[in-house]
Length: 468
Image (tube, rainbow, N blue to C red; front, side, top):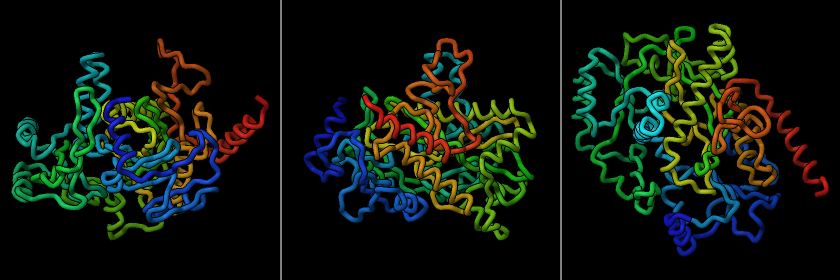
């Protein structure tokens, strides 16, 4: 066991209250699960309706906690957890979900691939727009800006969500005005970002003081990113895709891809003539629902299955297969880029919300990864999607210890990476030539989850009853 985990284990035993303490074995089947969460949305509905799950409040002991990231920062290092206990975030999830850290890790990983495997392999990481962290990379940004005068850039605060603080610009004067406006300003509340955990030479992290320095940040950090000026449009409107990836472990990397998701549309026709109009350029529901002509019941979403069918009718199945395969590459490469820096704790899992933009050449771009994707429904269809997503997340997390660990599909989730790519075919994968290898992903395909779950649990029950 690495020294960090020995230290954390000792600290937790000495200083903290335990959760889920029991004398049972780790994989013993459980009929009573004590859960806790502070999120009053679709998640609470799912947890309260799950058979055998009981809500605990305040300081009651729990087996499962869907926590927010602020609880994680304040309590994780001081909480002892029994073998079976699970929480909904990795300790330093922000390595992937903070916009500046995500880009730094991807750039570092791309350099590693080029050094170890050559430029062709490194080029598989070219799925994020050219990005600079501000204000620390301001001079590098200015140099790049002057190479390409007249193009559009977008500024995003690294630690905010729902479109807050974002603006587009084409003139350096706009950045200079921004710098003057933020000079000497200290971020507060949601604007703060966690300081990165210290990294020792072995690549592991020391989290004892990871958040202590956040009030010392002199200015709110932004990223300046080249704006994708040629987005794919449907009905003249811009959109991005929200895709869900569930990570159960980083070492080894074990990741599941959900079949359903949605395209989020802007409410106003796309144009580059009005870069100040957020209703044109930002697809966040939090932004679009404030539009005067926003339709509350219909919203601005398409389910991914409808989107995939639309693209197939326009461009043919082969082009769509290539696009979705390129998206699979984004999910895996982005997770691999943080695999050595994320603290992989067996008690943790994470449901990520990926935001992907498609351009007119059917090239997917990674915009950001969310550690706390919205679980609040914007329509009845959205509520049904998120209810099924959360139910299947709980099936994969498997607090009841019903699964064998060999499953490649659970409900709407398909296992896409298990310390290596997972094949759609049964049996061991022959990766020597990757000749006929087809990845086990079905994004935007039919999601017959109810029937699959019925067969899965019937089979598991039969195995349990069979004589050994």
